[in-house]
Length: 202
Image 1 (cartoon, one colour):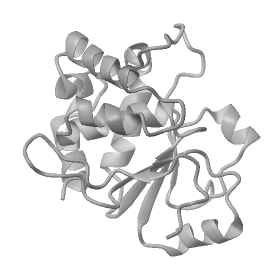
Image 2 (spheres, helix red, strand yellow; image 1 turned 180 degrees about the vertical axis):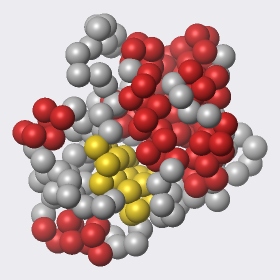
Image 3 (tube, rainbow, N blue to C red; image 1 turned 120 degrees about the vertical axis):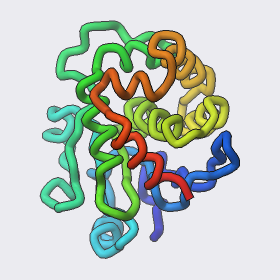
Image 4 (tube, rainbow, N blue to C red; image 1 turned 90 degrees about the horizontal axis):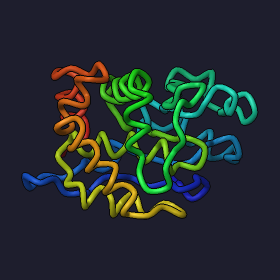
């Protein structure tokens, strides 16, 4: 696959976990939106067995303005991560309020990844930075990747600062007591957490 046409694309494979494991190559992919992909890239995704699910985290209004070329495909799931009306002002240095105020949708998006058919899952939003960064961070944390490693990877996206994700994950620990308790709060049980870990780990 040639992923060069995908904004902010990367494979999370190879990131180490705290217990000596690593994220499996091809299991979790991230990018920006796909509305400007050339036909060859769209055909390659459709013809590949690498991607079993695409999880689109954008608002419905964004999807109407810039439709996904995969919207009618079986592999596509539209799972907006943010509520239609935000009841908070996003701070510049943390996604903590995003975790607090969008819990039902975050839980649904996490399940969409954990319960996908065998194969890779491609997660994206508009720029592949904020919403994608948060969901990917939750998945990596659930799989046992250290917060510092997750934050460094987050900072590889354009205009992303490592400290923002460090503070987000610190907020997760301070307010909820860790990833398992947060996921339980948003409706993700232990079996779904285990399914997410199993699909991501080598």
